[in-house]
Image (cartoon, rainbow over all chains, first blue to last red; front, top):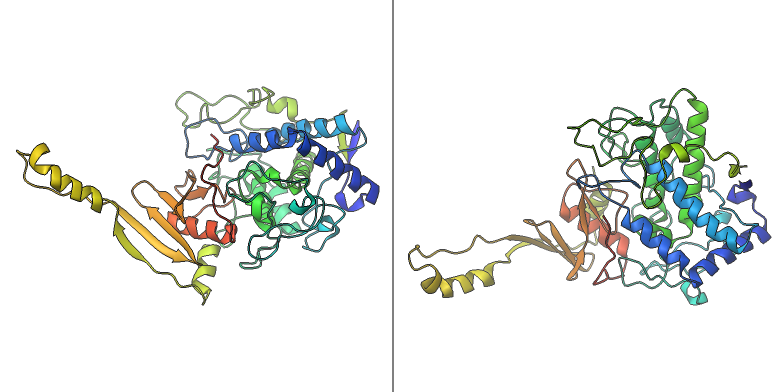
Length: 287
Length: 125
């Protein structure tokens, strides 16, 4: 049993151990395999294929397992390391300590959006992008998207998602409008005036690599998704009588049959079920 | 309506040049040349031109083949995906969608900065 801490509470030594372990996974090739996995499992919901990672009910359990796999690699290198989480409703500034030189480094520069500070700056020689949609070999960010400003989600916006007692609803995709914590927190469901909320909006606010399928190229990905994982806990605690949906495989004739994961169906690439991922007692806890 | 498009419209420095081209023009010429051989019994015909929208946006060349929703930025292919509601997602923007391929392409340019798309991008699905 280990603890995932709020990133703002980490000591300088803890930040250094975390980034050192991340850099070592990058050096030995493990890191880029994780980037590829995330990209491979992004299946848009118009495709008649199985969607496990996004635009589907298994958004939370799939990412929980994905983070656990990454954390296992980190802890194999340094058992004192765990994934920190970033509460983007409170640490919402581009000059937060999260983006300081001793942790994730700051925003990208004008023009090519290259991150120039911190351990993941290309010129430090330890962070070359090998899995990306652009030719850029350096990590890119555009915090707050100054050319078209965007704000991080507010506490009220987050609460709107957490207050929904329904986990998810048909058609179990990005258009699910009948309510549901999953689509509200993933961020496809939003009032027309806003369009994007919560998880999706955070990817957009960071910008650069974080807006694409190879988002884990930016180590900020793990801190963002650790908080998303914590929010699934918060929702479960707030709605103890609710549960994962769909609870049973969809009926023959349902257009989403075979495209979404029910409670006891296995999720690739690990063949674990949402039920197995529903809690994490005895493995880690959030502080 | 859509933030990126609205910002683009508001940006005074933007010099967008919209025009419609006909990708099939060359093909049509070839078809005309072969017509006596291949289509001797048919009346002479030209191929229906595939509409191609092109514009220069923030100094980048965007082309959208409306038939196949194929988008290129400075000649490099942008991976295009569809959402269940019919809107468009790209390899650059996975976490927001756009009503048209052109809005998608402009948003990709906004996000790319001065970077070029890779000739071969990783694929998923």
